[in-house]
Image (tube, rainbow, N blue to C red; front, side, top):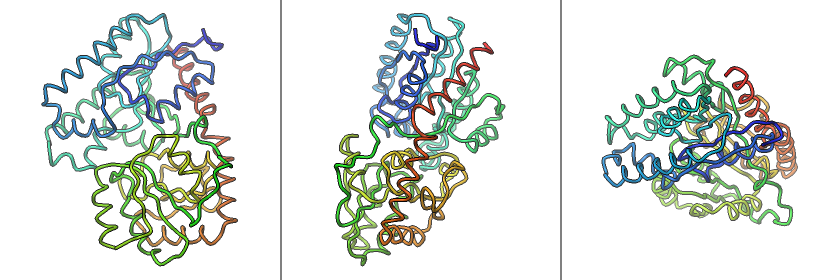
Length: 381
């Protein structure tokens, strides 16, 4: 048993490689919680759920995959030792139903790291045009799933407000567990010097939430700037449109790189000078945050991202990062140029971002917060 006497089962078909799940499991363990992982793989990749929302659920092969995953989960769960609480990892919209049934049988409390809305993600990506019925079903299913656990986790109070309005759920059911970065992997690497020319890096999914087109338009405004290049790392549905824009503008200062494994990604971040966040007008960006901001903080890198209501109050423009208005390539280009011409500002933002990371956004701090919510729940149970 752990030093805290608390044993949690991290349950479901969650994406085991996803940063949020890895960070919360590590954070709980640092907080003295014994974490037993009960996991079976269901989702093939990050876009698999979106293919489902587009109508792929009609394929019998998908249901065979579902049956294998959940029968395996059930068998693993029945072999577990005694525990105190079950946590369903992200994404868990389907897992919650099985977890609720199993925890009722053992009379154990259930927690779900909701983190995001599958319904909102699907609508913002326009998937209702492919299968309106599926989107309506996902909303109904999400509404039902949210009513099962004792505690629901999100990363911002803004997202809690959205969920309570959207689904008429009491805000008392929610707890905030913020997004951060895993310092086992993201940390300053001094032996990898910043490259010449100065590199501005974006990495992540090519999805509407990130506003990749704003980055490309900013690069177009800076195309005559010497000693400056952009690296665009990742895959996703809007990448063809991004490549079309680069071709249309005849840009030679942008390099597209396929998604990298974490070790190689960290090396690219270490060799960069500026890390970009997200810049779209999407509702999702108003409600939640991106890991890459905190991963850059952890690696002592200067960050530029859009100003949104969801950003933590500790993040202040000109102190720990530069903030620009959403959807403004002009402001983004100006911020990048300012950082290019002012290495002292880059260093200061990087140092202050790293201090914030050490104080607020690392697995130890986040794990203590999460463990506190679990202990509070168990006192109530």
